[in-house]
Image 1: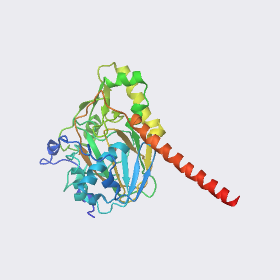
Image 2: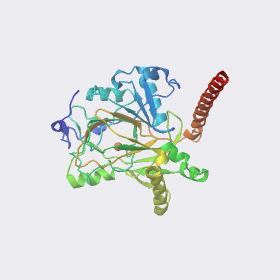
Image 3: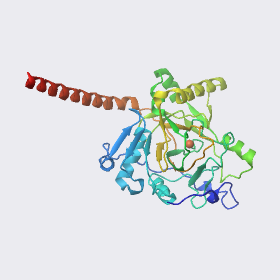
Image 4: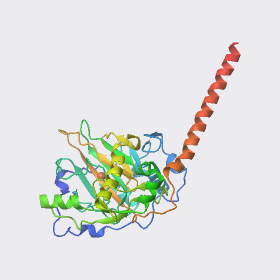
Length: 359
Ligand SMILES: [Fe+2]
């Protein structure tokens, strides 16, 4: 595979690449929407599926991300939107070009205004702990949704680590659908009428402290507090502790109260979370529209280096008649119960037959 060495990493914009982010745009189609709900093409290649929790996070075996057919890529996008985050092991052939190619199947790729990138592909950002000393710039140890400060934030992020620490360095995701579903009806109604301002303030501070030049504009954006995922049609809470500065049209105290409450649910509700332990060339792909994530900054004195491709999504929207994961999960839960009952019945009948034989 192509090794992205430290020498190839671009840390600060030169004159000619100070307008790179002008290329950023929003998706004009929703990848995965309308694909086969049973995902037969995708699961024809899957050899093992491990759900990390009933509603959130799945590890898939048997798939090589470089070999997906068009139909499989569409079904995978839908599957990621349903499960929030999907993990893959041993994706050794996912080099920079393949990484970019995979992302482009789902939408235009985002160019980050500040995070260092690969000099050949500005769409490939380099997450190298040697370049981001803890405590200076990092979103690695606080809950966020990638690039939510953009007018068209990310749909999917595709992250691979090619160097992993010998210990530590897990990533944790939290499920924005469950955060929404946990709220009482009056609070849901309140939040559904609100918007929030997301900003690049973190990067402005970093830029001021380091003198690094950005690859283009640092954007701020206003987004609905409750967002409809266009693939699943489910509602999710869409504010985060890194980029969301305030809730609009309420007092500063109320804004803080709302953000603190929602950010606490994201960070503290273990039943909304899954945690992934990386191996070399593991890949995680998640839907930023309805999940949050944070690195666990526990791996010093080890280092890690990975690459991320970030797909730009649609302009966020909220649709009153949207569904919820909780409602959709009722059918899944019933199917699980029916399966368990059928298995219990078979076991009972087998035992009865054995007992009758020996009697
Ligand atoms: Fe992130």
